[in-house]
Amino acid sequence: MESGCPAPGVLRVAILLSYCSILCNYKAIEMPSHQTYGGSWKFLTFIDLVIQAVFFGICVLTDLSSLLTRGSGNQEQERQLKKLISLRDWMLAVLAFPVGVFVVAVFWIIYAYDREMIYPKLLDNFIPGWLNHGMDNDGRRGLEILNHLTGFGNIFNLWSHLPLKHAAGVTETKYLRQPMTFWVCWIHHVTGMWVYPFLEHIGPGARIVFFGSTTILMNFLYLLGEVLNSYIWDTQRSMEEEKEKPKLE
Image 1 (tube, rainbow, N blue to C red):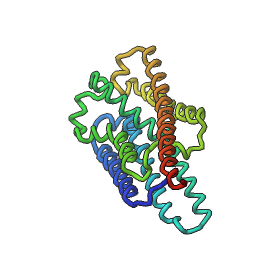
Image 2: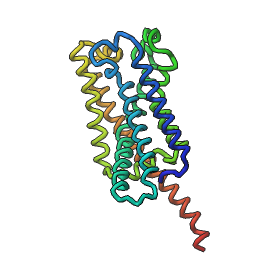
Image 3: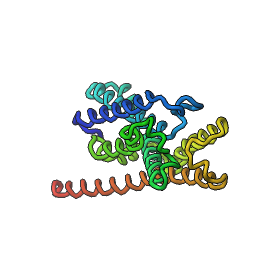
Image 4: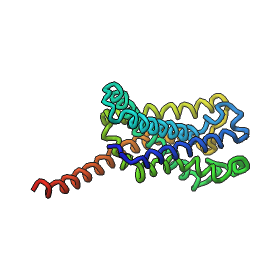
């Protein structure tokens, strides 16, 4: 249930503006990779930031629509609002959460092992440290803020609104992950170079295993959302029932 407090809505606007600021600052940087095939869109981190910005844009639009339709009694407006809420919930479950966690986790795991394999020191000459951390942490941080501080209560409660069946959700997550893999491979086909250096250092078989593993990880993240949603809401429902018992007695 949406919160009646305006603070969560203001916070979502602030998160959206932070994403837009990071994207604008990144696009303003003049570096060689931006001038080659694919530009900024070669990088999954950039794609993830766009996904998160669009998601929070939909959240803000939903907040505004909710305020405008509150108490109006207009059934058509309420019907359109429900569609917007369904779109927001679908995007969180299938794109914003799995892709956001995936990109951040994979980046920092490889970075910790050998930063030259994912983010060479040469890039420090073009991208300020604060911008790099903003780009590679804001997907996770934005969802955490949404989780703990906004009127959504917990990000996983949105799964309770989704019309997706269990298998359908996994399938959609998988099919939306595959174009990202195809895009990385297509760039290599066109330019002869891999977007990420570590892909140059592993053989074809290892690349197949890696890309297959990323699909499995994305599906796992979607299922993790379902499990956490079930646990959180079953616990919350039990607590509410316990609170209601004294009243009934």
